[in-house]
Amino acid sequence: MQPALSVNNIIKYFHDPETIQVLKGISFDVQPGEFLALIGKSGSGKSTLLYLLSTMDTDYEGTIQINGTRLTGRKQNELARFRNEHIGFVFQFHYLLPEFSVLDNVMLPALKLGKQPPEQIRKKALELLYMLDIKGHEDKKASRISGGQQQRVAIARALINDPAIIMGDEPTGNLDSKNTKVVFDIFRELARERGQTIIAVTHDDEFAANCNRVIEMVDGKIVGE
Ligand SMILES: Nc1ncnc2c1ncn2[C@@H]1O[C@H](COP(=O)(O)OP(=O)(O)OP(=O)(O)O)[C@@H](O)[C@H]1O
Image (cartoon, rainbow, N blue to C red; front, side, top):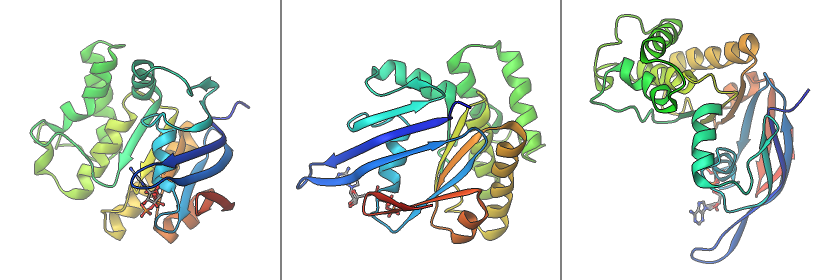
């Protein structure tokens, strides 16, 4: 089976104020449908790695492939399109557009991609919102729903283009334990039922313990699974 993600010997430096090597030769593959937690102490390089995997930062050595497509060395506009089509992002803070409706927030990435007519996108966005239990709130402004609901709307937005990979940077970091479990269960179901690949940076030991794979980083290296 072709890996959903293939990372080969990633090395990353920051040069400000002095040069530090933050990632020191990171290699691993992730298979379709895996639900992977990336753990490690503060400063170990987790967010830096996720940012590279997300294709947002292109200043590194080594190679990154997603679904067989080599992303290293591509132009920014190609990467932006690839991201929108193949990667879904869920962050600690939802970054919804507060003045836009819940439904519009979910529809926007698909409207931008422009592969389907708006009516079809609307139908799909509503299906996702219902799946994530946000029925009845779709016409409200995103700022007028609860934190747990906002995070589920952010997940719906991440799913609208059927991404092969969903990347989360502390996706439950801002949620109480009840909503953390809700979000965890959604991710697990996406991995199990739809074969979507989930990679989540987390500080939550219980969250990590329940994933089907855990990678631990120490000082820019993978030390264990
Ligand atoms: N833009 C930057 N410029 C310089 N150094 C940076 C930059 N971003 C991160 N670093 C440094 O790189 C190292 C790794 O940071 P990173 O944010 O990846 O760690 P992390 O494991 O995600 O930490 P946390 O769990 O606290 O989020 C740290 O020493 C940090 O200070």
